[in-house]
Structure formats: C-alpha cells, structure tokens
Image (tube, rainbow, N blue to C red; front, side, top):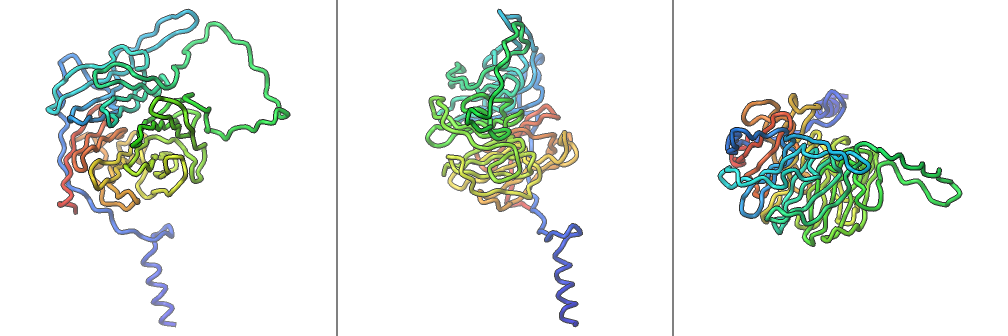
Length: 360
C-alpha cells in the first residue's frame, strides 16, 4: 500500500493542474538591442514594419506600411496603390535609397526577403502580389494579380456548377492551381531557386511552389487542423536540405515539409508562431517569434530552436521599451546571433545581438 502511495505522489508531481507533464523551464538567452540605428530624413517615417531582410553585403531592406495611398480611375475599375514603402539602408543604418516608389503593387506590405543572388522580393497582402526586384531595384518578376477595387462594368454571372460534371470540389482553402493568391503572407526559396509562397491570410490556406522562372509546379494544404492543413500559414522558411518550415499561426505550431509538400513533423510548445527564420552557417537554427495576444503587447518572446524542434532558449518580452517586442512580424537571421526584427505595433526595427554563453 505504501508503495502505491509513493508511486501516486511521483506521478502527481510530474503533472500540471491541467493534467499534462510539466516541462523544464526554457532558458533565457541574454541579448543586447538597438532601436535607433536607422538614420531617416526628418520628413520620412516608418509605419508598421512588416518586413526586414539583409543581403550578402549586410545592407538592410525594410518594407513598411506607410506612405500616401492614392486611388485612380482606370477604364473599368479603380486602382489603389501607395500604402507601402521599401527602403534600403547601409551597414551603418544610413538610408541608401527608396526602391519602387509609387509601385502599383505596394499597398499592404507583409514581407520582404532576399534570395541567394541578392534579388529582393516583397510580399504584399493588399495587392495579392509577390514582386521580385534585382539588386539595382528593377522589377524582374510578378506573381499574382492585384484585385479590382470597384467593379464598374458588372460581369455576367457564371453558370452554376453541376455535380454531373464529374469534378470534385476542392478542399476549403486549397486555392487555385497557380498564383491566384488571396492575401499572401511570405516567400522563401530553396537551393535550386524554387519559390515557395505562403498564401493564407485570406480564404486560401496553402503553400504554392513555383520554379525559378515563375512557372507553377504544385501547391499543398487546405484549411484545418490535421497534418498538412493550415489555419493561417503566416510565415515560411527553408533550410539547406530543402525542408520547408511553415508558421501555422492559428494552429499554434510550426509544420515541417519536404520540398514537394510531404509532411515530415511539427513543432509545438513555442506559443503562437508569427514569423520564422532559418539562420545561415554550417549549423542552422530556427527562430520563431511568439505573440500570445492579438496585438502582441501582453505576451511575446522569440524562441531559438534546433531544426528538429528542440528549444535552445528564448529571449525578450512584450512591451514598448528596448529589448521588448510589439508583434514581431518578421525576423532576419542571416547570421546566427545577429538578428533584425520588425514590429507592427511599435513601428520599428530592432537590431539584436544574442549572448548565448550567458543564457540563464
């Protein structure tokens, strides 16, 4: 009888009040931060910082929700643009130039990325487009098409579909076969130059894959909670082995796939993933920002993980002060311990230097 009582006490000690096994506390990684290193003219301001990315020379690109939105009347519809601006800064934070000023696709920024050839890619959820610039800032490729703001010529209604046609309805959120994006959120690339677009802030909940020339190859995902399903695929990253990491925001997990969309595993217990980034170097790490409330001002942190999901540590907290975070929408982690993060609710970029040897 005493033996069973002792066993019961041990089991009880391992369980939390909710009935789950207690976990060891996550180590806190020490870090330094700077939020005033960008040098802007007195009449230029950042708004919500949706995207940050560096190129191979250490130059920084910031895609921000600011500017002067305008609407113009075309032949049969209204065209809106001007809700975002893309800035380039040198290594010291000095403003180099603005790229794509007044560009048709700039409406509601969500991400900026730089590929291995230093091409610059923006993702705009307002225009439903992904745009590729070369290093000189010239447009090279457009994926997606901007939606019509107001239809003036009313189109004829499409005939209703018939079950006798033999086709089966697509799963909710599976999207169309191509670049028919609905509020895309991020873009990533593999070693062969293939393009992966997270398409999921709107009705779609999928990952679309294109070759380096923009030809559609495949897509995977639908709305749901099972493996390979998504509830807002909010951010995406790849590693040198071709694995694809998707921040499945609404399902509070990071899903890992091969390059053809085959499900491999998932990572949980890292809060609500907002932005993911895989570092460079021979030993790659995965970073994931967490925001446990709608505006990221009450519960926030950034997790550092091994690629197999083991948590190395975390750093930061919610707030408006230095070393605090307000809805981190983007992370650049080209080098392991030197990060840039863009915040929506704090309208800023923070430059972070991790001190992993001082983890507590």
